[in-house]
Image 1 (spheres, rainbow, N blue to C red):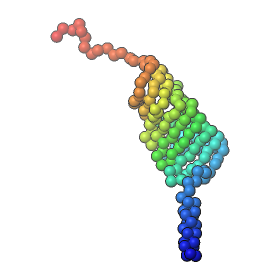
Image 2 (image 1 turned 90 degrees about the horizontal axis):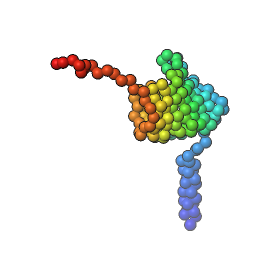
Image 3 (image 1 turned 180 degrees about the horizontal axis):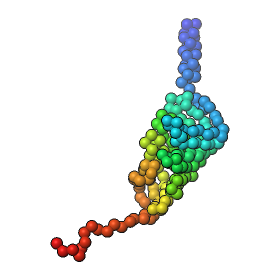
Image 4 (image 1 turned 120 degrees about the horizontal axis):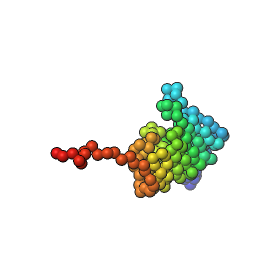
Amino acid sequence: MALTIALFLSCEDNAVLLNQINRFDENPVGIAHDIRMVYTDSAVVKAVLTAPLHLDYTHLSFKYSEFPEGLKIVFFNEDDLENTVLADYGILYNQTKIVDLQGNVVLLSHDGSRLETEQLYWDSEKEWLFTEEAFTFQNIDYDLAGTRLDTNKEFSKLDTGKLTGTIVVEEQQDSLNVDEKL
């Protein structure tokens, strides 16, 4: 009888220990206020991220950083021109290099282009933007609204869902002259 109780207590102690070891710790490893992160490549500034609150979850197996009170990212291109992204909330997934921006997402380009949506994903390695949410995009040639967007950072390769709006198209004269006789 005493041996049975000892084995039972021993197993229960191990179960508690295993539960503690396998417990998912949802607390951030770090909390920072009023942050400014500078991203560089070969000593060249590529982007500056500012946020009122940064929660660091890099201690988890799938590492990420959270910006629950919003963020602003200023990107610099090769000519040192600025493009700015604003959002109410953001998550940076460290391993995939994808940024998930949510709530009143606005992308302002140095050329006056403006993209607005409720959620926007940015793949920083491929320099690609995508959303499944409704969006509006305006620049000198476009005034569009759509339901899905998949594009490069220059907006020169667009793949969208249903679109409404206006696009400026330049008509080119046909190379054949219909008055010429063959």
